[in-house]
Length: 360
Image (tube, rainbow, N blue to C red; front, side, top):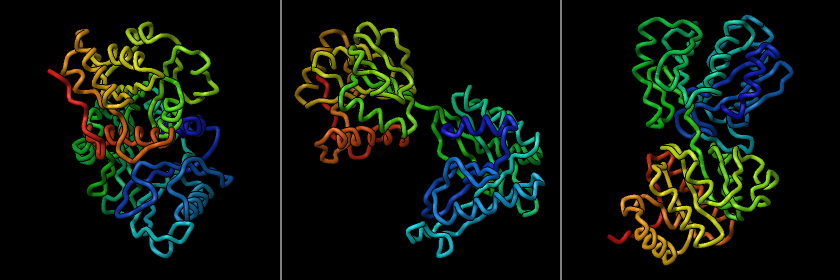
């Protein structure tokens, strides 16, 4: 959804009419999962995706019909992914998808989207709840926005107290990084705060990881002491490109429980120095590249400098899951796979090698 912020701002401001399409529930195998978002414009163009194929074409056809009618009424569309709605290449998923088609043509809907865009910009995560099946097909869907503290911010449609109470009970704390769920005709679609990925070292592997991590919804920061290495040309999508030595930059850099740190500098000494400043800072994750021998030497040396065994035991090294990586891009993929698993599976990393034991 964050990728669609410019378009959402545009239609919320009344500059264009569109249909706001949200995948609210899936069963079985589907090309996209709940939370996927697409905007359909009156000229037939679109932004975002619900997975492509015949489903997207049918959503577009229905959306254009809704805009033409101009009544402001939305609908919930059910797609069974069988012979009628397979993928473009003819593969049949066999699952099903419930998709909200909400026209944005009235002041009420634009006000709701204005609140939604403000949450995207200002809030460290929020929840959009959609009641899409309450037993009466003639009833429009109900949409409710909750901020990161589970406080109701805005709503669209009928919101009786009982429904709001039922929905509120389903909203989990965003600190637990909950996944989307759908129960009893109610979809809970969390939009989680982006985790920052601080990459210390802008060389080949750092660049390859940054290129992939941006598309994985990480907020990418890169640090290197060589200005030419952290140029905008090399890291065009990084939020911050930090130039300076490790000892100058890292002590003053904000590190919190949503920060991922990856140490991939050009040398043993730089890696050790970076870990010295990062290990005690309470980051959500710290990973460091290198051979087991090098990592053990760094750990032993840092302990003599006062870094605790407990802090070093939290470091993931060597970083990257076991996929037989040899090339730079393969190594970057193995690292990013580890980052995804740690972020999405509550710290569990499937396939990673045993950590280096810290001497006590």
